[in-house]
Length: 100
Image (cartoon, rainbow, N blue to C red; front, side, top):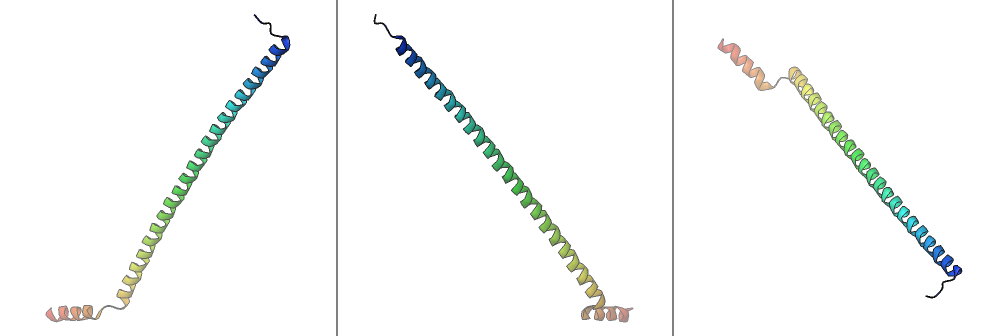
């Protein structure tokens, strides 16, 4: 059995400690990287949701404005017809009066 010097044992221990240190550090770094990736994905998902909500709200506003415009056009048309009845309507009224 060859004898191993204390210096050799110390070197081996230091090497093992060094390797263990780097392995632990590497594992921690991988965990940090995974956590950072999860945070990044969550942030992107929240941003997407926010943009989807904004798009939905925009569509609702556009639809509401369209409905308001249609109502204004209808009111204007009704008022215009009341002030300017079509000629055929006047002739129809006259014909009804004659028939009575």
